[in-house]
Image 1 (cartoon, one colour):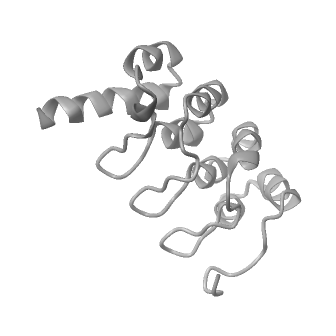
Image 2: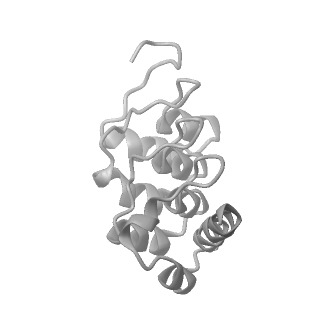
Length: 140
């Protein structure tokens, strides 16, 4: 049975990463399943956000996806969207995020991810919503 669950979770994550809402509709027949995690702690919302699939992000949020869940590195969907400069996705996630200044295990925030990758429009977007500028070594 664990093999089947792993395979099922893999199909959900793959569909989210591709932005395949039609398959997600079939796979996610129960609200609680939308927050399943894979072996590295990633959720379907995290995969969709990291790829900038705004339609899929909206779909998952409407199904009850928890925006504040974290993977094994304490990374959130907002951080992953910012890392990849997906401003439309960041815009969708911002009003639902409880902590725009949340930090991962390295002490990095969504804004720092965006800045590191040179996504300055994303940095401006995050700052306009209250993201703070500080070093990863500053105490929260």
